[in-house]
Image (spheres, rainbow, N blue to C red):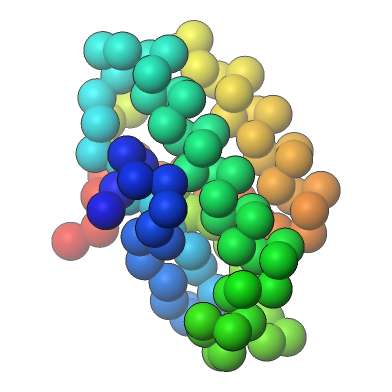
Length: 107
């Protein structure tokens, strides 16, 4: 589980009436290109999970709820990837899904 496996939704939870699909990203940024590739695949799989309606089958609590994709990163991203996050946020929000990045993995 984690950003390396795009076929798995890492964590799903309901908080304050909002469904959070969480990506656990514990990779450092020493190979930023590979890291971004993995992250892009993971984000695409999360969007497919939502847009296909599979989320409603696997997690019925999501019916009529706002959905947010949350990335919890262990390491601060390098400056060179800021454009990726900005673009990703636009694409995800245009799909009607919220987006957030948090530095520091949940305990």
